[in-house]
Length: 61
Image (cartoon, rainbow, N blue to C red; front, side, top):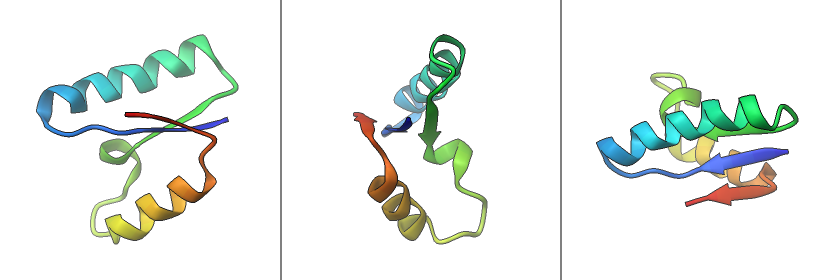
C-alpha cells in the first residue's frame, strides 16, 4: 500500500521522516512516500508529487 506523507516546515518534515521509518518497521507491506526523501534533486517536483498522488491509496496530512 502506497502512503503519501505530507509535511510543511522543518519540524513537520522531521516528523514525516520519522513516520516513514516507523511505518516501514510496523507495517512492512506499506510503501510510505515523503517528498524530501523520495524526489531526486533537479527533478520536476510538481510532476513527481502529482504522479505519486494519483497512485496512492492513503495520505497522511
